[in-house]
Each structure stands twice: as C-alpha cells, then as structure tokens.
Length: 310
Image (cartoon, rainbow, N blue to C red; front, side, top):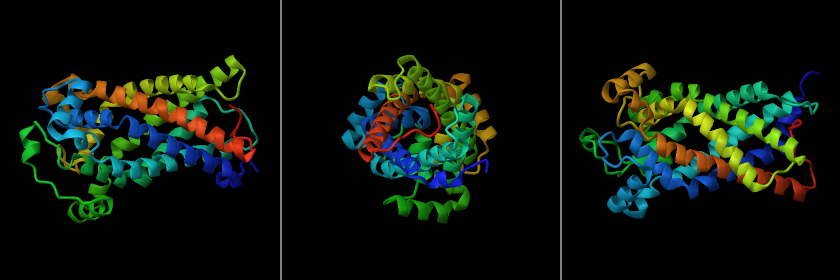
C-alpha cells in the first residue's frame, strides 16, 4: 500500500492542528492593531496618514481603543477555524505522503502546502468575508464614496452570514475566492521556505528542537518572501471582501485594472508596509508558539512529534 490513510486521523496531526490554531490566535491578538492599520490602508484610498504608526495613531484618536481592536472577536473565531483546518490538512497530507518516515523536500512541501491552502480557502472563505465586513463596520473612512455607502448592520458572525447570503447570495459569501485560491501560493511559499530553513538549522545545530529565537527568525524570513511575492493579490482580496470598494461579482482582472488606472503601479502595493509589519511579526510569533506548544504537548504525552523526517 503506497499510502497509509489511517495516519490522516492520527493524534500527531490533531496536535499540530491545535498548536497551529492556538499559536496563530495568540500572535494575532498581540499584533491586531497592525492588521487594522493594514486593512484601512488597503481599502480607504483618501486616508492621509500613509505610515503604519501614523494610521494607528489616527485611528486611536478618532475611534479610541475600540477602533484598533474592531472585529477582534470575529477574527479569533475565523482565524482559529481557518488555521486549524490548514494545519490539520497540511500535516495530515504530510503524514500520509511520508508514512514511511521518508524525508520531504522543497517541492513536496510546496505542493502539500498549496493543496492545504486551497482546501482551507474553500472551507472558510465565508468566515473571512463576514470578518472583513464586521471589522469595517463603524469605521471612519476618508474616502467620501465609502463614507456615504450604506452597508447592513451586522450583530455578529451568524447574523452577518445570514445577511450576506440573503442580500448577495453565494457570490457574496465566496467573494474574493479566486484571488484567495491564487493566494494559496502565499502559505505554500511560506511553508516551503520555513521548512527548508528549519531543516537547515536542525542540521546546522544538530538538534531536532530549535530555540525560540530561531523559530521566530525563520518564520519572519519565510513570511517576507511569501508576502512580497503575492501582495497585489492580497490587496485585491481585501477590497473585494470588504464590500465597499468592489462588487462581489467583480473579476480579478477588473479590480487589478481599476487599481492600476486609479493609482498606478504603486497602487498595487498600497499598504505594503503595514502588511509586512503585521504579517511578518504575526507569522514569526505564530511559528514560535506553534512549535513550542506542539513540542510541549508531545513531551507530556511522551510521544514523538515528527511527521516524516525534517
């Protein structure tokens, strides 16, 4: 038998999924104001403040602490679900593919991470849509068209899911799916680089478990590479999901052409500073928490944690 499908449901896969979800939720809470600044820069074209610290200060002045953490509870629900699905599928596929403890390589890491990201997008995209809507609810925009646009009032995730479905149909709930599927390349590249650097450092130090600073550093490097490679599509994704700038039926090409005409080539990288600052720090802390949480759980269980040789 070339694959052992029973390993897909083994406890190591579940532990990695839980550790990944908890690690991401922890890091997102810590750096959430950076995500708020990044979203405003991507969506609000007329906001005068261009740097991340200035946007954070502006939001705090206008909307106080609540503005910086607007949508944090829906995010925790969304991010925990999304990263549980991603880490479960990613580690489950690795467990099945490398059931004989063979050594994975960069290409296999890339392929498995891409498949896991696509499955995650299809399963959780409606949650990301309503999270973006909830995060923008009550926000103060500088662009007049956005300030005047009337959006439904959402009282929570379930209410938002129902209203988006009722008013916009399935296309509203799955708006931004195409760029999201293309953006599956982002975590694929991220995990490929991370795993490659991790294997290198494990070989260099001759230790299976690295220290926290190393996990943080290689996680940051991996996210920088992935973000720079895919940022214009992330910008399109944010604008479509928000429901303010674009119609849910707008094609990827239409949004990209519109951005180029309105803001030029630099418009495709609007909010990049905030995105890099937020995602790099978040990803770095997430990998640190993920590795340490997984190692701790496996240690107290007295069980090995490796899925394939790393």
